[in-house]
Length: 563
Image (cartoon, rainbow, N blue to C red; front, side, top):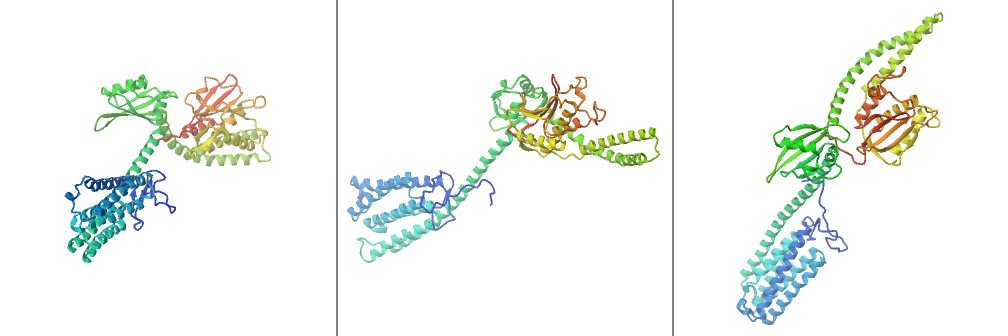
């Protein structure tokens, strides 16, 4: 099984002998140098080691206390009391010595396992010798040590521990043959005990491998869940749609920043009472059986907000989820769909008009070149050529609008971008020096916009500022700032012209509306459509002296996901 994301770290240990967990209790280690494929989670490994150390301390106390109180012969058949006492004390001291090693985690985990298990094999074998060999029954303690070593170290090390324990038991049998032990030992019992050691080690290997696979799978699932939760939180927090989850007591369990913005709330809210009267009334009506979708007027930019309610049944209680959407976004999507169909139709019409228009224009040019043309006829031909060029300009604008591509938004720093745009604008229009001045204290404002489409918008606004303003007397300005209402980054193009009559101010963005005899009336219309494609707003703002057109852009400092 492959995991392409969020793989847990595997720590192999370093050649310098550094402990396995210098970087915290995360990741895995390989305790057996002869089985590099066997790995154990760090926290689980050291917890198991702590249990083994406690077991050894308890066994040491169990061996020493009966000798201390004079009751050892009741429990064991001791043939050499001094040897048994010395080995029992040595076992207890070795077990106690494992505590500082465990706390300091030095040496590394695999080394500690090998030291303690081999110490058990040597010392318990000595106890068996002092108690009469295999017949004493102390060989079962070796089985416990072999099983513990197999679980802690795993792999080939478990078989090594079993082999060492079997060799110790067979050594007892050989010593018996040569008469070194005072009581006879059954060679059959020694052989069966050695075979039991190997069986126990193989069983420990199987169990440890299964536990290893389960732990690795659980760790990977835990990593996936943690990162999935982070991903879900990121998506919810960056949605343009607001999301609020309330419990049965009308407490807010979760709310994203978009909900706070759409409800025009200044701070965090934790209860229904803090969400505003319009939302509270709609929610209570829904609880009483009212409609699941309603509209409330609570948006920060003046648009109404569409609210949808739904229930989220849980095992312990029932939660309510509320989805808030700015109606302007929905209307914008509908408008874009209509414009797409309209653009295809207008493109076809423009193509059909262009062919006869080209013929008319060419015929008028040929007539204009006639040497014996009367003055009155020449005047009429010039009128034909003038209006043919105007119709062709309209067709060009319509064709450009029909071929408009989808916006490819990116995050740009507005200050440096504006200076670069003005340099190109002045060069294209042969303006020396550039008549525009850029103002604004925060030149590092970021916006999420298609740079090429923003360039088209500002080219139209700047051209209008030069055409209808008074650039020879007052320099037109570009101001960069944040909107006081919704804190969006804004670009204001300001001229000092005569202003626009309030009676027609609402019509300037309509297609083909113009107050100029030479204009087509499509410039501001196309500019506004391009702004809406980028989730921006283009507004006219009258001034005491002149005109101001404001482009409110999506904030690049906190990108949002639109669904």
